[in-house]
Length: 217
Length: 113
Image (cartoon, rainbow over all chains, first blue to last red; front, side, top):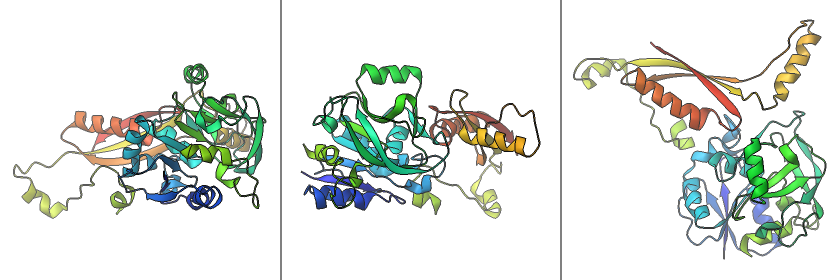
């Protein structure tokens, strides 16, 4: 059982994720260079935070064309678990694995703070250890985290029970306070908060552990 | 260089003017087109940067700016067999790369150079 952490030029949370999964949780993890195509032997893939390809054009717009993501589409369609954190969430929407888009925060600020989250759906493996409606805090650190989608897409998300997490106090203007969503089957999760920054009790608590443990559960 | 770094799946065709007459047996130059793709946020999407700029306009003393939306202009030069092919390629680029249709619209201006 192994986790792959994709490394794009400009990723800057790849090592944090590996420290969290391997160092804190003891889950076998290896890096996955953006030019690799071979995902064999991997049971889950994480797209980490950062500024892939400098976030040129739009966040995640160029990362979408990386060879590793062509393989990721096949991996995801066969039910493999995929977790996109922050920039990784932006990449997943650009790639079309998750609906909607992430754009400039309502107040234009880069926001770096702990934020309270509410569990909307405990249906997916990512949040099955939480109770629906329960709350926990995770750090956020983004300038372009305002989730946007059409009314039809929002209804589809609600119908699919695919809204995973909402902000208790909306920091960035996201539609319906959305902080994280899954695909219809629940195997793919994208979220703006950083669970990997809340896994080490010495730095930031352990509230993020359950989401990362779900990679291999 | 950029193609190698970014793995974009198109090949930049650079042809020196001195060689083209040898490479083109019919001695017909490949038509070149100039294009400008304007990318703008959909009307339903909040544009906080535009709002901030609009507020600055009134601080400059320019009143009456009722709407200010910020977009992007992308200028391209490309070769294509004809205008229809150029337009097809540009539409593909605009839809799949330059704009994200979830939040953005685009318009295309195309001229032969």
